Image (cartoon, rainbow, N blue to C red; front, side, top):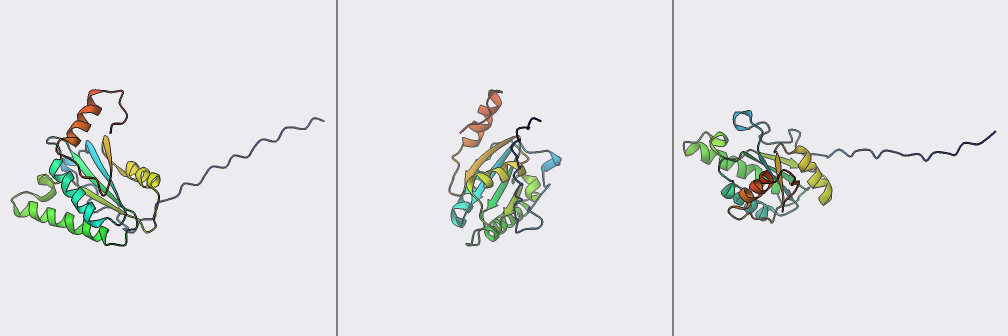
Length: 171
């Protein structure tokens, strides 16, 4: 008889699960005003850049467009400089400041923050993919810890992507 040609074996690559330090994976998961998903997810990757990261978070908070629901996701790439603890302290301090100022904490205006703290370093593409998968926003802004948004930048991004339904990315 005739011999059949052997078919090549295609093996699917196993999906690597991200190994997270925090079992809860989030500081304030589900802490969205009125249960509404955010419009804009600020997705920040950090690797041993605690001071730059805190400046980046402060800039996000200062430049958040009025009327745009947002969330902040920080992926700490197994930093050894105390970045994850600094993010937790920063988030607690802004929640307390909002409550002391008559605000209802995060419900009064501060964007919810989720911290994803890796126990092993991963590459840029893997980190960005994790953030995009975890983001709840309609739009995502990928940032590194040394990024500092200028006033109007996030508003311009949101407007550009909303104005052109064919747009899939902006930068």
